Amino acid sequence: MILAAGRGERMRPLTDETPKPLIKIHAKPLIVWHIEKLALLGFSEIVINVAHLGGKIIESLGDGSAWGVSLLYSDERESGALESAGGIIKALPFFENETFLVVNGDIWCDYEFERDFRLGDDLAHLVLVPNPPHNPDGDFGLHKNRVIDETTKKFTFSGIGYYSPKLFNALECAKLPLAPLLREAALQNRVSGQLYEGKWHDIGTPQRLSEAEATSV
Image (cartoon, rainbow, N blue to C red):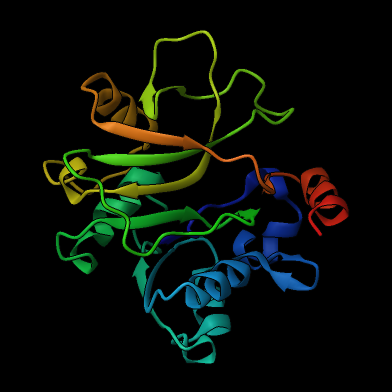
């Protein structure tokens, strides 16, 4: 699943007429970088949630046949963007109780997504990265490949994670952030993680877009 429903307030005025996932880096929309990589790694079905200017995303990407994949859309335009967890909950019927990958539509990275990731008894696996200047305190700790919350040294959540539907099954579809669910699961020792130190950019502002353009290739 690619999360693509956000308004992108910090990217204005660019996002007044262009949904953030369609903003280009090196002449290619951010979301297309993801689709191409996922297709190359063997993913065949990709769910995309849409809200702000969602029609432009659907019109631009179509059914996915251009990349040899099937694109499925979870439409949040009527309700308004449901935040990360809410968007995932709405899209759960697409995943048929299987472990699924979620990636933020507004990041650029060279991480190699895993198609058949095995969670075992865990509820989630998070990909963490070294803290960028805009998030110096980080989000989650990591100890022997286990995500922990109560620690002084934390890393930044990359926006890439593998999830069990069990993390969301008891929740109703509503505007709901993801971080509190992950922290609760981490306290139960049911979240694994890894530190990825390759190329990764959070394209959250025009300045970060310029920095990514200058350093990502």
